[in-house]
Amino acid sequence: MVKFADEAVIDVASGKGGNGCAAFRREKYVPLGGPAGGDGGRGGDLVFEIRRNLRTLVHLRYSHTFKAKNGGDGMGSKRYGKDGEDCIVPLPPGTIIRDAETNDIIHDFGLETEGRFVFLKGGNGGWGNVHFKTSVNQAPRTALPGQSGETRRIKVELNIIADIGFVGFPNAGKSSLLDYFTNARPKIAPYPFTTKIPNLGVLRVDDEQDIILADIPGIIEGASEGLGLGIRFLKHISRSVGLAFMIDLSDDDFLESYEKLQGELANFSPELARKNRVIIANKLDIPGTGERFELLKARHPDLTIFGISIHNRWGLDAVRDAFISMVNAADVQPVQDSPGSGLFQATGPFLASEQSSAPDDFMKADLEDVPYVQPEEGDYGATVSLNRKRKGRRK
Ligand SMILES: Nc1nc2c(ncn2[C@@H]2O[C@H](COP(=O)(O)OP(=O)(O)OP(=O)(O)O)[C@@H](O)[C@H]2O)c(=O)[nH]1
Ligand SMILES: [Mg+2]
Image 1 (tube, rainbow, N blue to C red):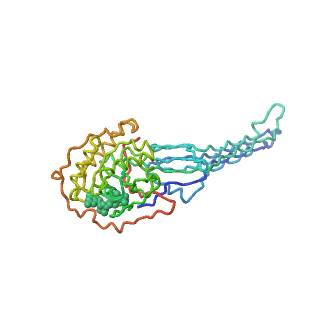
Image 2: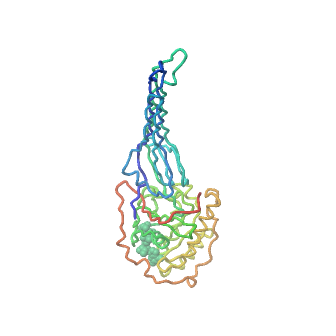
Image 3: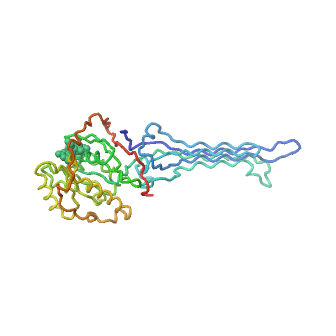
């Protein structure tokens, strides 16, 4: 697992143009050779480059200043200064650039997965005295200085682009589901707020497609007012194409969970609250949860509800298929235009007998030796476990 930086303040600067030169041609047998001072070279640009294989801002954490090279000065014999080299700052997709002082968004790279963006142009080189020769002034001594470059302090912010974000109360089994579907190994434990920073994992569909799943810390009622770990982590799923609401059927609050979670989401962002979703009712292996599952379905007849047990591996293939359909549907139509909840029809009743039963020692595996990173005060990020690049989507 990698400690993950999702914000950095950096100073960026483009290069200064080189100075023009004031010089004269001095050559044997060429009297009054005239002005021969060359122009200064252009200063380098400060360029942002989106690289799809980058996932973090960790490369901005330790070097804070990025400066393009200055242009070279012009020289005699009409030699021009060299152009300054551009400075390229690599950024992961999903990066937002803000002004460090005002916090205004300067540029949002959104879903762009590659491309270059010239942020600060280098200064032009100054003219050498060859440009100033006129009929009345045949020996100009004027040459212009190079234009200075620009400097700015900016805040670079990363919004993880997950395809599906998990939302749920603490202890519902979100991390367990991520562990089941992906190569990520988040900490799983029978107490609330086990997950303190978001975890990402890749669900491998086939050679052409991967789906990125995001497990974020549990939210509780009042999270939007700062209770629990708050809802700041919701920003990490704000660009996902769909949400999976995880409901713990062994929790006595199971019937109201969905509305409460939805309320917290709406307080964070109405757009997030409108995203396509499925409900996943977990822990069906616990006695008495079957009836609760029926009650939950009756309460939300218009929503897709899957009953699963991660311990017993029940119902998980259907969830996987739903994730794939949700992502594929979003590739065809923009998320904003799609209907909020009507995309998926309710599934048939959960039939335990149809599911393969697997040894329930799953999840009891020793996860203790997985390194766990405690976020520092005021510093939050995510763990990422993305071993495959995404291909063929979101070009
Ligand atoms: N009986 C049963 N327990 C489960 C199942 N899935 C997960 N659990 C248990 O539920 C507890 C919480 O699981 P986590 O995956 O850590 O839950 P979480 O939603 O990530 O919790 P936070 O990180 O605290 O928000 C663990 O003790 C799991 O072993 C299941 O299908 N059946
Ligand atoms: Mg967790």
